[in-house]
Image 1 (spheres, rainbow, N blue to C red):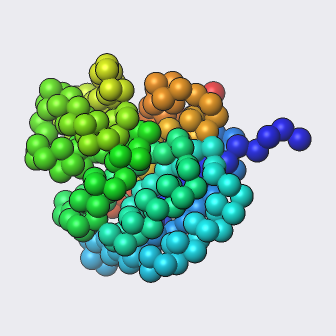
Image 2 (cartoon, rainbow, N blue to C red):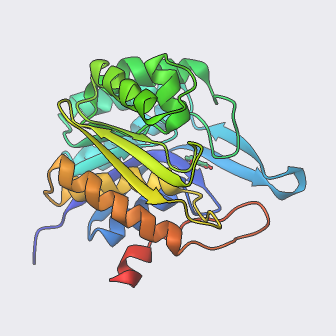
Length: 270
Ligand code: PXL
């Protein structure tokens, strides 16, 4: 039997299936890897209240117990973090990465869900910045998160995104992708990748209708999937970009509120 490639997500549950741990595990499967998970939060969306998100963090000690289970087999080939939910959970994740000498760490510094514009928890955003960015092989903030982490506030141009990426690299993340997605004005979806020495700007036509719920989680999980498979960071980011675009193109309208990506889109298009 060939060697099993192991991936891990530490993230929240999105019952609607597009984002969170569901996105990550489906993406890991598409990358031919065996996915482990530790659940940090449960998110519900209320159809009777404009799809309002409620976020229920899990006890940090229970996250630690799950990670003990996962790492009982040693470090995995690559991992990613998503919504973490509390400062204590961020601390548990930091300790677990260090104790297990885990490498190939993708930090997706989730602070908000699409369509919601309040930082879920400002203290955990600071904890992610201070404790997890220094451990990141790759960090993948969206436009909003990059503005918060870099301290630049609202980012409204490619130049702003480059500056934010450089500052976040300075906070310890060895590679940074600022996911502009469709958030910048204009017809193009733009992401900026900084590997510590060079910038790569990815542009693509914005896809309408935007079946993109879960695109950010899927992108970060895809980078982890690529790293687990032995790709370089540059290769893993470029492939993840193609993977997530195909996932958006093959997404669907779930209801009047949300259109999730389809994580098998890349495979369908091959
Ligand atoms: O897309 C951000 C996100 C991350 N993780 C979970 C979510 C969401 C948004 O809905 O539910 C669990």
